[in-house]
Length: 454
Image (cartoon, one colour):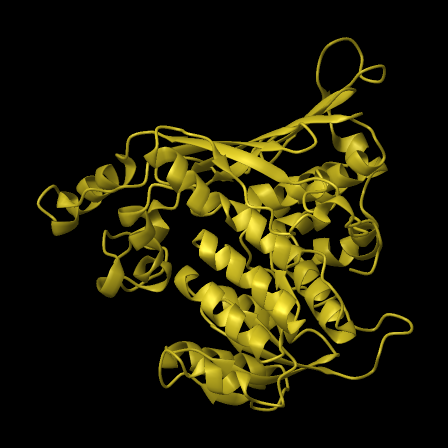
């Protein structure tokens, strides 16, 4: 169990990606179609290339097209495709909207979108209108209008959308989901989650290395600092809620027998990014004069129709080890689990009133997917969650069926961003969550998360 405990910690650290599993052979399940999925990638930066590399491990896909406005990223992607023994795909990226020419190709069945946030909804809507099975990176939308655009386009076209939330496939997350499904915690009451991760070295860099020292962003930056940092300058909101909220929403059957009702949010003062700039670039650097809008710590509380509460924390502008801070509390027990903490208390099982280490619990409730492929994932040296989320996308796309995390989930989970912004602007005033299912959450059945296929 020491190796399992270490592995759980590794999967936590790998929560944002960087995974290839060369020992896994997906797409070969018994009875599966032999027809290959014609897959395209819009955006082949660091995240998109990660998805591409994982796709190149499969035997049931063809990479037929790629798109990126950065020629350097195109060349890197083409080399990876060639090295993997795949044919050269069609290439797009001559302009911001060249991706629409990619979407016109009959040689594309499905598309993975890994671009800056402001392009997510626009590209996903165009992809669904083109009849492509669409995989969309997180967060899926920036405004309530965009959330509705995703839902309305899915309903109007019949094209499916999957939000590619990889944390839902973390080994510890799926083990706790298994425990929830088996009623270990009793009737659910309360959850905590969030995204706590020092991103100052991501939002600010030297314009040469993605995660290097430096205090530049925008046109002078590189990688995510080119676009991500601007959100912190202009928006006081939880702009990245889905890594924490996605797993909790599944545990609480949100959009499938339950739904988010309301949200209240508060933000602290904003000092972390300025402090970092002054310390690394000097008080006379032009960026040291900027007034950042996003509070260093943003706390949102969500109420559900079934009477649970969910506290979501966004903390990325100050010193903070990576943590999603999960808590699941029910009438029978409670667990806190993440990189630094894996503890549980179950009434009538745990001795006394103290906490118990979760090693034995993780072993007992290990998810069927991880039981089936866990050894290969461990041998690969990384968490494996990116491969699992891509597998779910590819298998769903091949069958052209609703994915585990669909357009309604993408809308509901992403709506935290505009709703938190409105609440903070109005001194923490409650904001009503739209019902993106239009009442169908009452009848929709939960996805079968406990199978060993995807």
